[in-house]
Amino acid sequence: MKRSRQKKSRMYYYFWSVMSATVLLGQLYVGTGYRLLHQSMEDLLDKVDGVILEVPNPTRPKYL
Image 1 (cartoon, rainbow, N blue to C red):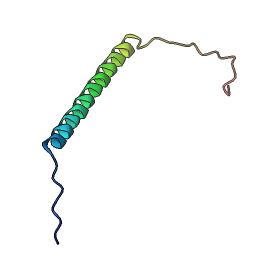
Image 2 (tube, one colour):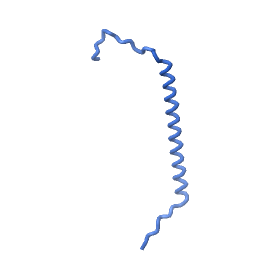
Image 3 (tube, rainbow, N blue to C red):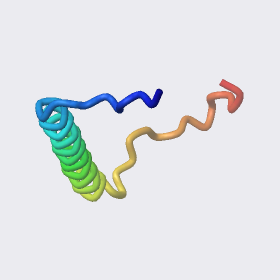
């Protein structure tokens, strides 16, 4: 005897379609946030370019 395939309801497909769209939108949201963070970091590094943050001490041993 041949077994019939499991029949899925429409709600199954609606549910997974909404979940897939949610994941896609979440990825776009996070990616946009990282892009904005990257641009902010570049702007900050451009502003402090050439600024010496610590002057090396010539009397301090190099191994520390």
